[in-house]
Length: 375
Image (tube, rainbow, N blue to C red; front, top):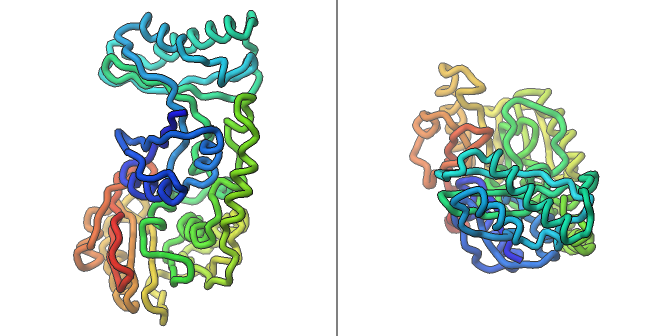
């Protein structure tokens, strides 16, 4: 099967490294997707193990679609009976860009009609009750060309299952994981997040440190399909065998808000890493460490969460605190345009990322070795 992994802008390199570590080689990335070949076992492994990818899709077909008739025939030609059954709950998703077909809602309706017609003929049934497992079909039309996908994931891969309590401006789990994976942090190194909020960054750091697969405790749409053999438990067992159970120093996580820290503790317990994180209520300015060559990764407040008049002082003090540490590296995400100037010193690396629909920059300040690695 042809598989693809949609990725958020700015984290492609991180996902490609994860795929290489899983044994898939150097997979090409194009237009926000990383493509590879695989079977159902690979579908399971990718869903269970990927930290920064958004979901895993099966790419079913590409064909010219200058009009609705061509779209209908192209979709009907796909062997849907190999994937869907008489009870499949078929949902449509997609996008039209510079296409004569214009509205994706109309295109989705035509495509679903073609799927239903094919299934009724091949399965020998008069109706599809759609009371069974969910199957999300994607119709993506760019110009006069259509591509059709089947989503094996369901709820996005960022939904690990541990973050159930809300707190202001949450960071997407996949973005946090990409920040951790792209940093100098490795198991056993000092780590701190001084703006931990609801705990996403330190939890993802602990999962990474322990080599705990982010999808080990959740389910996926493909696991409920009759066409998919029972490969999910095998992928989970493989992931569990790779976990790191060696004694390790805990990561540090703090926030000035007591409410945030209590929520973060709750989430860490749900993620199974409560013993790997040392939480405390503390102003960022009070953080100190006698350890050398540590890694600090944070998502500090930006203008959307703090008065503009207070931002410059916050980032100035953040930079001053960081420079008091011994050879640490610091990575922080912010939409505040004056962040680099206020923090002090030019960042060695800058990467554009999106957080909750806000255009942000990931600023990277490198400390002592290991040697600088590309983000």
